[in-house]
Amino acid sequence: MALLNRPGAQTAPAAGPRRALPRRFVPRPAAPRGAPPRGARSWPGLVTAVGGAGLAWGAHAVVPAVPMLTASVVLGIAAAHLPRVRGFVRGTGRAGLSLAGRRLMRIGIVLLGLGLGLDQVFRLGWATVAMVFAVVAATFSGTLWLGRRLGLRGDQPLLIATGYSICGASAIGAVSEVSGSDEEDVAASVALVTLCGTLAIAVLPLLQGPLGLADPAFGRWVGASVHDVGQVVATAQTAGPAALGDAVLVKLMRVALLAPLVAAVAFAVRARRHGVRTASGRRPAPVPLFVAGFLVAAALRTTGVLPPFVLEVAHRTQEGLLAAALFGLGSAVHLPTLARTGGRAALLGLGAWGVVAGVSYAGVLLTA
Image (cartoon, rainbow, N blue to C red):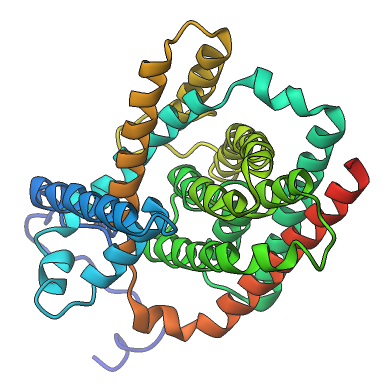
């Protein structure tokens, strides 16, 4: 027996019928962190997201200086931490709230294209178009580089860079759809970009005089440097209608760059996961469907065939959908988790804010 137990010793196979070897166990991939359990009902969370959007609309109606989308994020974060509500938000309502953050966001982004007429974009001239390209490129690359150097977790550098350079929370939601980002990363990035954009409403008007900007130039600076469309309107309207008009047009130029940026991210993700198929067995599309819908909507707006009342209804619907989606994203914010990277995230936010404000100010001076 001792000889049989030595290394290298061989034993004869045991007599009797051969037992079938067990099949190799292949575990199912774990659900993404923060994802709702399989089979969970969606309607309670969807109803809650719509109700949160209604409350945000009411807050904006009472205090017009508070953009509706900003109020939606804040209310979502509050709902995730109120003692009698957070259990529902993290349990029964999680499936619908997550669905609102994804599906309603996509539909809202498609409708966002109806607010973008390409004829309006080129009305300001090629110099301003080039300035907007430079601002977006510098802000995106600079923020992404700084975020990697600071060691932020997951896709936060990518998402924050997108939000600051394009159009705030809407851009973050669009990019997260193609990058497959963790829900907590998305929520934390939305919270940071929303906070900085809200601060811009109070800070930028105070700088118009010291920086020597006339009203139209101030409007172009606001449109090139403030993140969300609602925040742009709230900031620029303090300098009058001339500033507001230029601010919205410059902002629409930045929104127009959302489609190529999302397509580029989708291409990079597809290249990184070459040969990987989705859960349905299909390869991911090179350009997401909602991005194509955004471009079609922008082209349709440019033709001028849509009557004004249709555009107004689309605008209101888009605001409501994005508000419900952002409420869902805000409800995924977990402040203790956010606090663990809060210092680095805040530093990245301040750095990105400095980059976008500085580069856009220089661009406005060069193109005045």
